[in-house]
Length: 68
Image 1: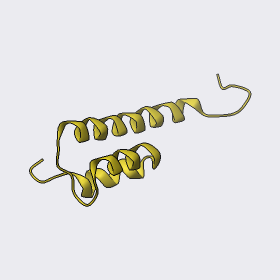
Image 2 (image 1 turned 90 degrees about the vertical axis):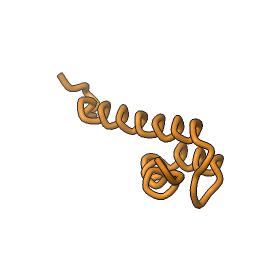
Image 3 (image 1 turned 180 degrees about the horizontal axis):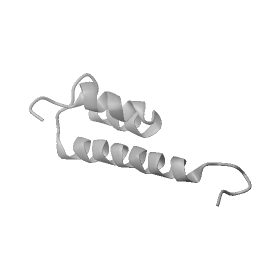
Image 4 (image 1 turned 45 degrees about the horizontal axis):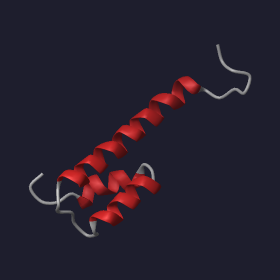
């Protein structure tokens, strides 16, 4: 049964959980590995936290260090 507000929570909650999991994965990866490309690690952390989900996707595509 939908709430009176009309917000489709059944669609929003899984997307929010997936986004949080993606950001958590990127932050753990940044914490475990000392190397990153194009920016310092602290900048990648800020990007992943505040530019959701594009910051995490950008880190995975271009920011991860070699050999992973």
